[in-house]
Length: 144
Image 1 (tube, helix red, strand yellow):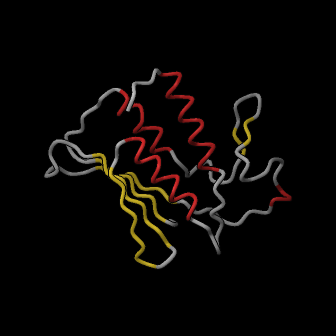
Image 2: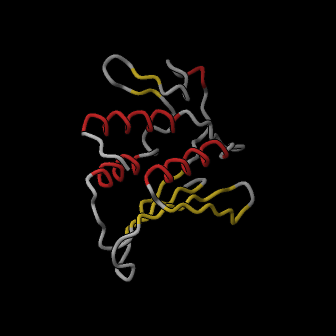
């Protein structure tokens, strides 16, 4: 991964956050395909291994691994999910999957409190050439 300065890391985190919020993964019939492909591309860009598992058909689990020096030590698991609950678009002042940003920096989108924070944490650490002692896993499941 090429070195990025703090402003570039902040901008990349914002872009990724807004992109991830635009995937429509609404229950009861979510389409996880585009979100999964995007997550896999993010793992590739970060140099993380990435495995896709479907224990239940059409219900993917994305497991990314940032390998540390000693796999025998306890690992850290960062757990997230891709789905969002149904939304009544008539009650929104902005499109719920538009990830629009206001002039004061507020982002309006469904799922802003549960999505994508782990790439925001991992990318700067990788940019600083941080080496983990144990393993760090990011698990993104279909739902809670």
